[in-house]
Length: 268
Ligand SMILES: [Zn+2]
Ligand SMILES: [Zn+2]
Picture 1 (cartoon, rainbow, N blue to C red):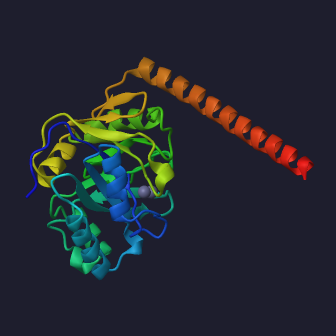
Picture 2 (spheres, rainbow, N blue to C red):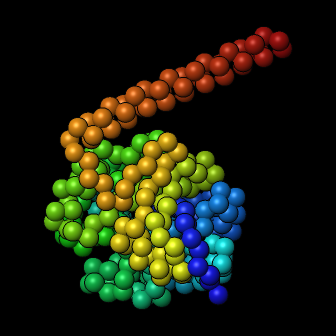
Picture 3 (cartoon, rainbow, N blue to C red):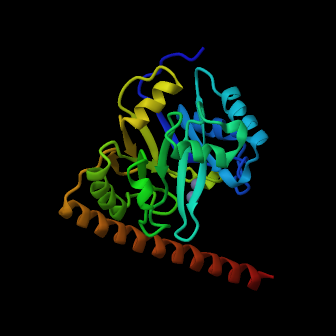
């Protein structure tokens, strides 16, 4: 029996060993989350790595590791446009024909079946392109992806796109995803619910309704970002500074490594 939890924080867009490139099992992810006081994770393993039987096992496995302390919500990540590399996260497989395989799930989502949460991931990877037939049907887009953008600041171009799309699709919500594949992927980006949450269905409703704030280590943003052109410009500047500082840091690290290795070799 899952109990009510107040002020929940959790992760969105996580990959487990059910993905061919995922390094952490569902159990390891659960443990890492609990160590960070995170109460839920939305797992979105790559759809192309699944057979119908494997999806059933995956959904059951997520149920098995969920209890009063932690909820694992299963989802799949689809490549819906190979040319532009548009990736769609489909969360909440309940009510969808997951026993028939990944393609049947995507078909059912397009037909408006079930109550999935459909979110376009890492917009910078697809050059901010969303296929026109998805613009009205998706529930959200990632306005911050810690793997493709920065762990420190959200993506100003994705926020700009969000503001434009929101006029066509009023239910659109902005998400912050980690795109985590291993232990280095815990980059501090998390979802913090505004209200108490009773169960995983309640959590999904709150995610769909945008009743959360996206928290980074140093910056936070609303799930419905409404930034004007000047704040967006400041964000763009901030991201340039952070990216410059990051590349300087990496240069320093590699110089230090080279220095240590030359000292070590000369000692030999
Ligand atoms: Zn992806
Ligand atoms: Zn991913």
